[in-house]
Length: 349
Image 1 (cartoon, one colour):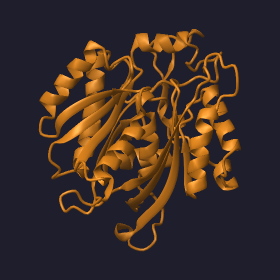
Image 2: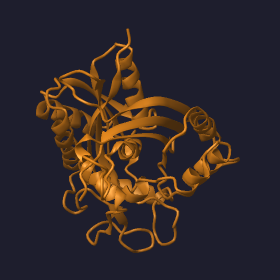
Image 3: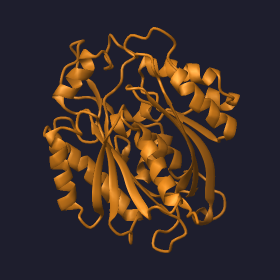
């Protein structure tokens, strides 16, 4: 017998703010947190680098502490909506360089000591080897088949380290005056609680995953010999052939290759003119948050709807929305997920 699985709660700590409601409002208001840090590193054009920080770059120079603060913010937000859920397994996607680094061992020990009542098992996964949103889909499938009760799946990443910013500069990926097609470095922690729905101790779900389609880009993005986008084309086409979404969200981050990737893929997909003319790019407001990008995009798709004049009694209004979310990683993996939100109407402000 199969169980009904859903996304029960989301904890988010990103440049748009801490908390799904806060980030959702900021996103709808088209807010951004792009600043030039006067005390931060200098870019190749001689100007301060444009950053999208959760915490000021010069406020916390200790990278280990910065990761802890990011994670703690997401946990605090998640805990508000997951009261009564016992210790669960945690699958956390980190940047690929961090997983084998000694810092990951320190991070694991800190999570165990600080959140022993929340997490019983901790598994770190490398971004690029997997996609954080794909891990959410896998957890959803395991719970739906009855193999598990619940999981917390998350992602944690920060570009706020001088050496990491230098690597982005040397690889030609950083935004600056001479490179208008670069990314703006960001940071975030996002946690998804995935569990069985209908259970009295979990409560109502925010939404669910209806499908996930995967692909892989074989072209070298730094020196392509052919068209970029074939890896995304098939999963995107399959998603739009199977579902008619209300929203389409892509994780475009300002880099040219991402635009070429999604542009080619969209040319072969049956997408309505309305969605083509106005698809959403949340990472354009948060900055590139690395391993957390796919979960930020999914969180925005599942965030409460905020209307100036909600119809009737806002507390009883449920917004059901189907969204197609696409993710492209530098290392090659492609993911197109179909999400259904059944969030309640958020309070107007």
